[in-house]
Amino acid sequence: MLDVSGVSWAVPAARILDRVTCTAPAGSLVGLLGPNGSGKTTLLRVVAGLLRPTSGQVTIDGDAVARLRRLAVARRIALLAQHAETDLDLTVLDVVLLGRIPHQRSRWSDSDTERARAVEVLAHVDLTGFEHRKWQTLSGGERQRVQLARALAQEPELLLLDEPTNHLDIGHQLQLLHLVRRAGITTLAALHDLNLAAMFCDTVVVLDAGRVVAAGAPEQVLTPALLADVFGVEAEVGTHDGRTVIHYRPPAA
Amino acid sequence: MVRATGRAVVLVVLTVGLLASVGVAVTVGPADLSIGTVWLVVADHLGLARSDVPPLREHIVWDLRLPRVLGAAAVGAGLAAAGAVMQTVIRNPLADPYLLGVSSGASLGAVLVIVAGVGSGVVAVGGGAFVGALTAFAAVVAVAGRRAALAPTRVVLMGVAVAQLCAALTSFVIIWVGDPHATQSITFWLSGSLARAGWAELAWAAPVLVAVLGLVGWHARALDAFAFGEEAAATLGVDVIRVRWLLLVATALLTAVLVAMSGAIGFVGLIMPHAARLLTGPDHRRLLPVVALAGAIFLIWVDTAARTLFEPRELPVGVLTALLGVPAFVILLRRREVRG
Image (cartoon, rainbow over all chains, first blue to last red; front, side, top):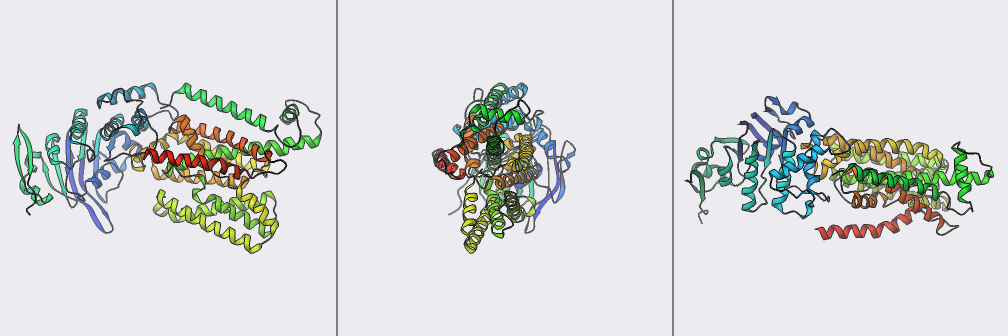
């Protein structure tokens, strides 16, 4: 369970996060929504312990993240970035085994248990048999699934996703979020696509200019008024097969 | 991924190769010494046998050739390993150990010692080079280390600036003094040469080499964590800033010690890591021992070629590594372009 309480983060010129409070109950998938520059990525970085909040506190199962050592954080929180890039000639197994680093006892070799674990998480992201494929030959969708496998290999209590579907086509977007959902790990995910958020998230938190402006179940939060207010778009919100669906209207000429 | 057995085989082969290279390279040279004579001298000094080789020949083997071959091994191993670490920490495949201004600082220090006439003695020049190298590195860190982060881009830019400044000052000093003897010894030194490697230099370099290789090896998995960038490394539990400081300072210190012994031998630290990665893949647990051993073997043979190819004249070994390194560098660049 993740608890963010009154978190602010500021640079000399601006306050990027302004007393943000939100929670993610154990096992839930919480969507973090908001326009560009609203502070989603910054909040994820604070939660991941990469940035120290100016004030307020992030706790994971009662432990303040800012007080945990880097390694202790890595054993409990995994981050899946928008876009993972490397020049190195890594295999898929190499990448997934990176996720074992926080848990690894030996400095010199990977144990059989660790390799078995890697194979297991690859199966979870439907990439069985990809162990020896080269990272450089993978498609964008495959790369993000490998990164998800790496994150799962960390055996985290909390998974953080920073717009992980940004560069993917719709099929791969749906697939990735489905796999995240299926992992059953408490997840805080910054998402751009509101329909995807409505489809997969238990609750959503909407940020605007560093503040939480709404939070709750998608169907309660994603109202035409909020969409106009925060995103500046005109839209109708309906339900279809029991799901919240957003229809956007083109901007008035 | 690391398979213990495959790794062991490669390491055994390279270790045997290194020992064999040392054993054979000491027998190669202008003085006509038989392999038996050379090994007898070495065995005598190690207390394994008694030789009655004449003192002059004994001197050639024990005081000239052996320290030189071991010096080549140490410089090759150190530069290659330092290059591999730099490429990972700076996250740039074209990084090399001289990126931190160390070699140009060393040149300036050596040149100042030579023209100041403190003594063109080996120890004085080496000392000047070492001080110059660390001063240049301190200047890079002083500017790039703002807010303690030592961000790679700043390090690279500052390293280039300091290197240019030192090179300009070195040229200025050489031209200003205009002493042909000094100019000659400086030129030889700038190109890199193992002619000055003796037991005294090795006594300094070897412990630093062993300590830094150990430290770097200890951090092999942390270096792996840098594959997808610093933030990814941090989320895998690596204290990025601490590791970066530690490893950059350690490699700069090692490079300074090596450059003080041999001058700035180019391309070993740039090319060897790439060559070794072709063999081991990017996993540092495999890469680091292999790159160090391969670098040692490589430089032993290049130096042997440098001192014997054009007998009785000797080629600065740096000239030869550049002649071999530039084509390798071009191939490397093309591979990168192909990959996009």
